[in-house]
Amino acid sequence: MNKFTIGIIREYKVPPDNRAPLTPRQCHELSLLYPRIDIRIEKSPVRCFKDEEYRKFGIGIIENPDQCDVLLGIKEVPVEKLIPGKIYVFFSHTIKMQERNKNMLRTILDKKIRLIDYELITDEEGHRLIGFGRWAGIVGAHYALLMLGKRTAKYELKPARKCLNLQEMTDQYDDIKFPPARFVVTGGGRVANGAIEIMERAKITRVSKEEYLAGGFDKPVYVQLHSKDLYRHKEGKVFIDEHYYLFSGEYESIFNPFLSKTDVLINCIFWGLNAPKLYEEFETVANDFSIKTISDIACDIPGSIPITLKMTSSDDPVYGYYPKSKIIDIPYTIDSIDVMSIPNLPNELPKDSSRDFGTIILDTVLPAIINHPDKPLLERATIAKGGKLMPRFEYLHDWLER
Image 1: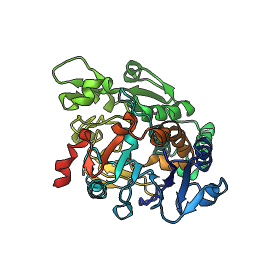
Image 2: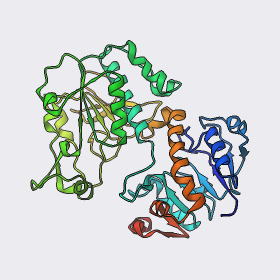
Image 3: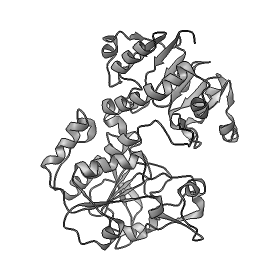
Image 4: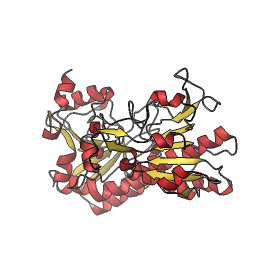
């Protein structure tokens, strides 16, 4: 392949996303591994790594990335910033027909851009290879502990965004005696595993589903519930993960026994468009509904949590839901159920999460782009190319025409 240029583009999301697909040191490593590759950094006032940090490694800083061949970002690119004919790699949030990004995808087609979506980079078995899921789980579980402290007035924690790194964030737990609360962590993927890292670091005791429902604890405990613990087939068929993910509309929730046993819900579960909710909104008015703190890391609207009604932000992370009036107001009152629903949680630890992400980019994405741009790994992750939707994503055509 002839020499070409990779550009790290500026993030334009509001509120700002501070992450980067490659750190300064990783850009330097890439330039050593592939001497025929030029790497350029679009100037940014919000990136967690300053322009000068890249410059110290000999990486050029540019005002405009229009001379770059491949453009790496994190979040969606504004329509007016999309450059015709380029290869873009970022999280597009289009495959679930997210309305807010319809015009962006139309423009990508009009400008004959090749769009490669990180979310779709998988192995041959369909397992995702790249993402920020672990960090979403880490920050989301920290929010659950922080919210519990505010509700009980037993302790205080700094949010992740006010900590230098993960170490500083978790060091706070060493001086805290957490109250005997009961936590449910839903899910079994990277997000849930990140949340469990925090549960273990905070020395919250893990118990089985049976032990959890039996109760009688004088210390904080948590249980992890996988999809098979949360849902069952409506006709009593054996639960098979693959079938549930494909035909989730055929299933119903069996979460009800946990509604009266749980103080804190950390929701990390995969949710499909037709999947059942964990519980129904009307159930929150029941006298024995005990959940008062919800860290909804999945943050699907609509989604598995019926009272996740809006996305929150790091500046205003938690709202109170009032079951009797069905209104949203201030959190941490006697009548509120407190909900955190920040969609970009990894951004609260941007340097740590960017380093992890960049490592996977160096190992998987960039070698393929540099050496084998038509490799199945990239073809599977390509939503649009040459002005057309790829066959896997032709279902988006009718949506775009509406």
